Image 1: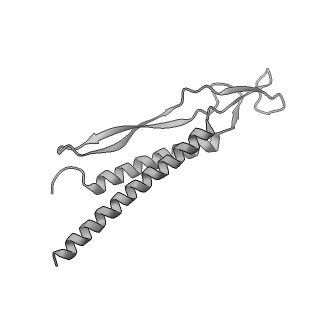
Image 2: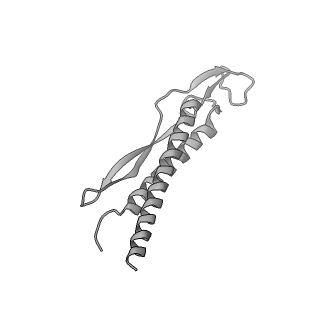
Image 3: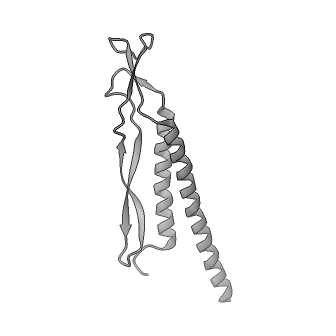
Length: 134
């Protein structure tokens, strides 16, 4: 058995990475508009950081290196009626750009679909090769 990545490894890892990307995007959208009593406690959007994984034959795939929080600052809003308000009556709204997150979700879904199609193509070619060998 040779060491290295097969098309199934490459696409499978890429799909797993896209799933992490989709989950962080969903979490960001779920927390959009949430408030906190402090700037430090406000939700900040998460983004996965990917790294390239290369086997001995030079074939590459992707892995999730870490998940980082956005540097975008939460916005302060005066809302003294909120139970989350600080002593000055302010709340801090999550640092999430909902429009950008929706674009990210669409792009992630497309990347996932592309990998599913690559796997289906590889499976079809293998099946056809086996059929020709009979």
